[in-house]
Image (cartoon, rainbow, N blue to C red; front, side, top):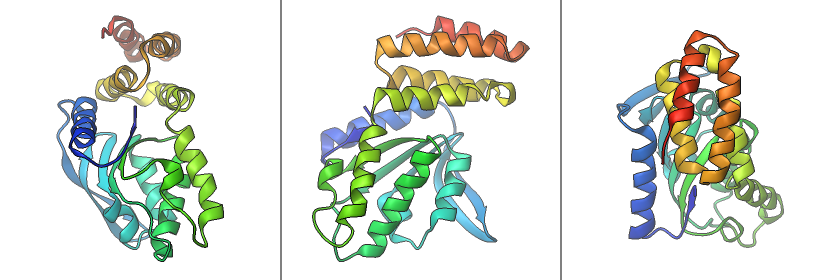
Length: 212
């Protein structure tokens, strides 16, 4: 489960626990990315994980270039406090649409804490028609197929990975995928890793020994 609504104490707790479990012992740091000569400050960065609020990504004047840079640096992205959209705040709506499009096309995994289901985030207004694509993509990004394919794609980069990144992948599989799907996915990853060098071959044995 990666999409949590409404925003209440129970869902906040589950969302925060997902962040803690996935990042594990990785230190949370402040990271600065460069976007066309500008600094883009990431206040909650942990390896290939990053955590944001809606305000940080959609109220601030960010654009597609910023979202692309985030997607290049992070595989798993947490976004909290997403409200129901105000039809009058069209700039925020357009940023959110661009954000979802960018992360979807980059096959990034999104954890979302929001006030409503995708179809209820925006009701009416001039952007309602184009927002239907956003709804469709948010729904697909919650699916087992999307999540498993994204994780499998990350594993194909094993030649350039170190142990910490591999552990992130295995940890994501455990906590995101249903157990039956995760077992099949880990088997596929073991095959990939076995073919990609000594570090990967040794890491493949880790994939086979992961327990729930």
